[in-house]
Image 1 (cartoon, rainbow, N blue to C red):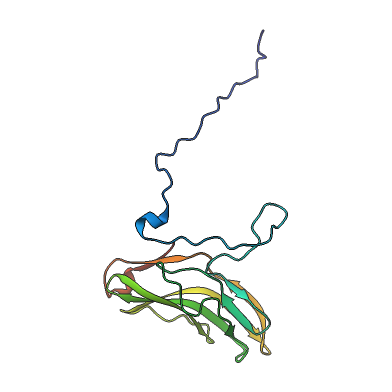
Image 2: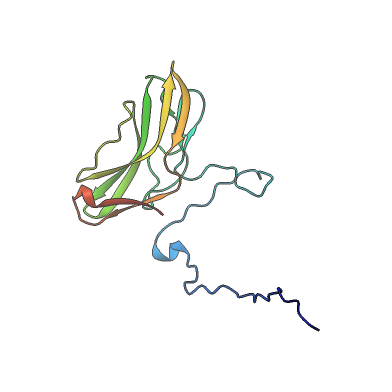
Length: 166
């Protein structure tokens, strides 16, 4: 049987992964479980991702579950009332540092829209911004969504702090 002139045969090649998957727990790290949500119909995920800023109602926002260097931040999944001041609020994560180790994490907020500057014992990362007018939330702008790791290259040197997705 003859093959037409413009017919090509493309072989199917199985992908080879030289780095097989290894559970994070093997290295003493925890990996967030995806939130449970109702199916969205298209096979997509319709829930909230870890460490994402979401509106709860017209006066409150919260940061949904997640971790920073394996720590569950204090005030996670806790309402943050932003109705007291009409402004653009900054909602941020603060990692407490000791040398090159992270020893704790907390969610913070500032009604001037400012994230504090890193110092020798703390590193900060914007989670998102919230606009408030007439004591009502008018916009929520998440700036990140997923658990984070803070990598400290040099102890007590704020220029060496780096936030990465864990």
